Amino acid sequence: MLVVMTVGATREEIAEVIATIEGQGLKAHPIPGAQRVAIGITGNRDVVNSALFENLPGVLEVIRVSNPYKLVSREAKAEDTVVRVGGVPVGGGHFAVMAGPCSVESEEQTLTIARAVRAAGAHILRGGAFKPRTSPYSFQGLGKRGLEILSQVSREVGLPVVTEALDERSLELVVEYADMIQIGTRNMQNYSLLRRCGEARKPVLLKRGMAATVEELLMAAEYVLAEGNYQVVLCERGIRTFTDHTRNTLDLAAVVAVQRLSHLPIIVDPSHATGRRNKVIPLARAAAAAGADGVMVEVHHDPARALSDGSQSILPEELGQLMWQLPTILPLTGRAMAQPLAVSA
Ligand code: PEP
Ligand code: MN
Image (cartoon, rainbow, N blue to C red; front, top):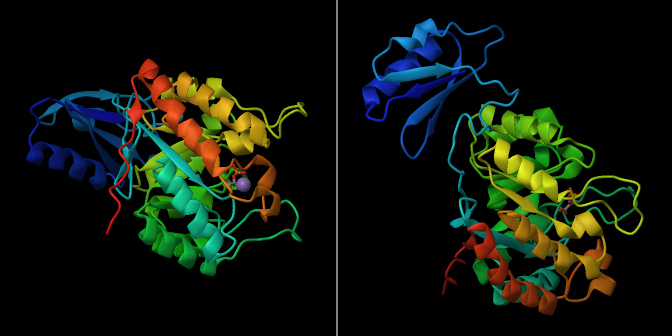
């Protein structure tokens, strides 16, 4: 349920609605909009009695949200959410490029790639320290040491960092060292982990499960918002189909579908979607043309020697080429490149 306040509702009137919600043992989620505040109600098992709120001062109307997802829905908030990642805006017209290696392999490798990514004009550095590998015998990431490298490199090049948390233990470390928590495709429906992300005070990049519907993706995001963390960026990274010319199938229609249903930003990862270097740039361009709020791409200066996902990592000069092409496409969807942070001295 959603309590919509009038345009001129006062702070006290909003506080009274929140107190009434909490007095029922429920959770109140004030959602500021451009015009007015709406207050989402969660935590109810039965139908909430709307008469409790309808006659409170400053209340315009009480709406029953028809979707299973509530806080993430456009009904709850009509305007696009802008998520800030260490100062870089994502969504609401700001197109962000997240780029970097699949895995943090060493200090030298991460610094080399981060410098190249920064020089190309990308906004956020990616790199995995905890790697969810199909085989237990493959490189599993450097763990805490990887996070230390990422945080040091982040300061050195002046880019915020997004990195994956695999479980509750690694989440604590990721929150400590990184600017954004990545929840990967294999964990999209790890509800206890999502709840912990909801308690964290860092933005979350939530990747679509490889066999998840758009509704399941939005319900996963709802877990994070329901715990009070509204800073969530969704990511379409390809889904499993019968094709064998790509690793997964990029579902660009999901971007359009999500944007109709939800106010949260959605970006596209053409690297994991295709698994092939030669397909990454064309599909990154397609993502921008479809109206995505950003892309995440894997970049490596020596992909043949990469410890993971070398075959889908583009070269730094290819990233430069993409960064140069994107501004031609973005105006078509009313977007512009997010402004990169100034390099700190
Ligand atoms: C990644 O981005 O490093 C990753 C493992 O992606 P996904 O969860 O989409 O497979
Ligand atoms: Mn990867």
